[in-house]
Length: 159
Image (tube, rainbow, N blue to C red; front, side, top):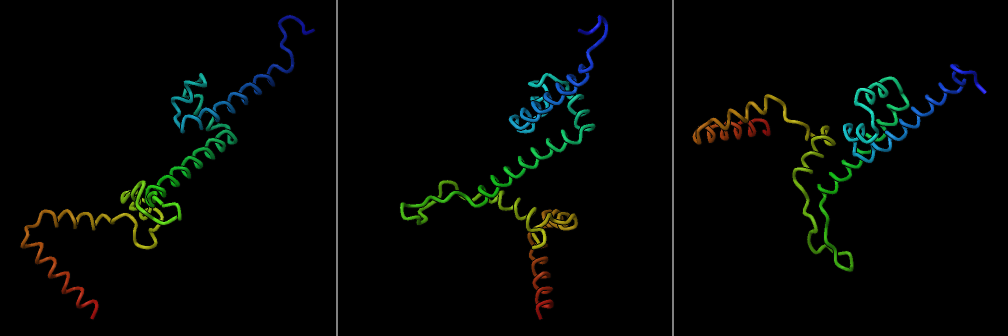
């Protein structure tokens, strides 16, 4: 039996073990709450500062959270691909007969801008945006002149 006023040797170990268990629980809650830190901290009964402190000072905890975040992003990319492709409606023989959900053009655009940059689908350079803004300000006559100028440039370029 321990003497009065003295703590047993394993109190620190129990404390570290309980913190480790708490972190495991937080990881589960974080995943269940779709990466919502506020909800996670509220349900785990810790403050945000503790969450960030543990994340900064415990590489294993941080890596576990990063794995969840990467998995979540993978799921979002999968959903984006489904939106981009659409959901075809097939008959009993597997032939296309229409759409359950049509392909989403915005999803296609996002995927091309992110995944096909090397094919020219990246974000529009700033100069191009400024040029487009200037075109909006032009009169119809000025736009036709611009089109004619571009056609001449194309003829010169194509030979």
